[in-house]
Amino acid sequence: MKEAIAANTSCYVLHPEHGDTIIAEGRIGGSWKSPSGRYGSLCAEGEHMVQLHRIVVSNLPLLFVKQRQPFTLMGHALVKPKGSNVYVRWLSKLLWQKNLKLPHAKTPRISQS
Image 1: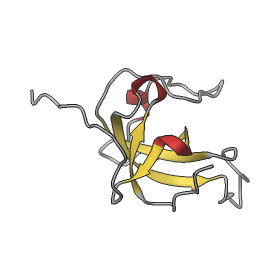
Image 2: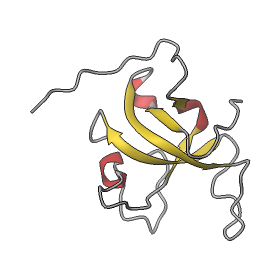
Image 3: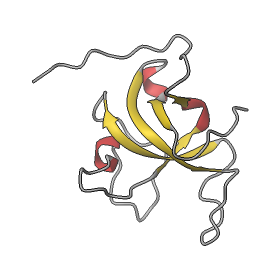
Image 4: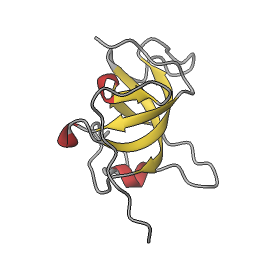
């Protein structure tokens, strides 16, 4: 099991449908090891809450969708410039700290349009 990443750490996000390709960049929220005083633990062991700040590969489904949640794609959960506070649950093994070297990860080319 991968260790928890500290909250507020910038990260790369991978997706099971894209193997070792970086599909987004974000910021870590809480993990299973850091329960909220108000809500308790927001995720199970091996999961983190993450904010998505930049989507590299679009139209991918979120890994976890709650019944009352109004969005199902990663692009819908993207943090807005005015500072929305949207966190999504993600598997810890698919999150990598930005300042660490990624084993075999690839970043797809982004077209400048």
